[in-house]
Image: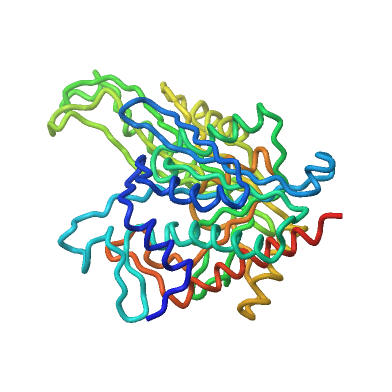
Length: 392
């Protein structure tokens, strides 16, 4: 079997064990391919010694930016080199870090999420520059080894540094696996925000036979939880589902059957759209808790704000590239979890996520049809060509 360049590079990346926050040598391999093309490659490390994160910022200035920075436009191709743990090795049909072909599929941890996208980025850039040696478009790659982990020392750190430098980013494609059946059938033009709450409802511990001498926080919390679960927070909009409130964990009790607990801890999460704000949701939750007369502590963690890229230059370039390569009219979607797009959207007005099918991501025997790989490279190249042509 003759393998194309993208498949060969994807195999090299899969062969690097890079369970988060490790990068293996993935970013070095990519930098080696980019440097001869005129990219300035910068490694940015962050995090404590026991959780060191490697980030790569590689940029090639286009002709428009070299003439006049105000006229320049930059496309960032963003992604992550880290992967989730393999799970039980004995359940894999082959070594997860030995790329293996079976029945027209490529197997290995990270093949879908998202080392194939990274390989397609690189090969698309190589082909684009071979045909257009001095494009008007500036091109950059932003890669991290902290996307599958806590995401504290990865893309968010690089974006903060780029903002401080005054670096201009006009468009961004994140290589997350967004497709469903075939490469290009779905892209993400936004994501919901995520916000977690840890609610501690305080009571008075006591003997279960003397409830008048105690105060059961579980009994007190349940009516408030029922009200929170029934609230219509918003109705969503043309791009987003309505905001969702979900309880994920309830911890209460001492383990003994004859003790009224002194507190109950409830974990919950909002996945919220652009019709709601983090501050507004927090206020509404507090109003419910106060109305029920609870004694409580409430801690919030905002994991990411919602973002949305409405149809414009980037969306149209992506749609056109997908249609030209596959004949598919792609579906715009904002479903699913979070991605590093939430950090990039703070410094970039147009962010799209586009990658291969996601049916096996994070699973045992993660795999991707080889037939889905070359179209992805061609789509990325098509976007480069169209954005370059849009710069006057």
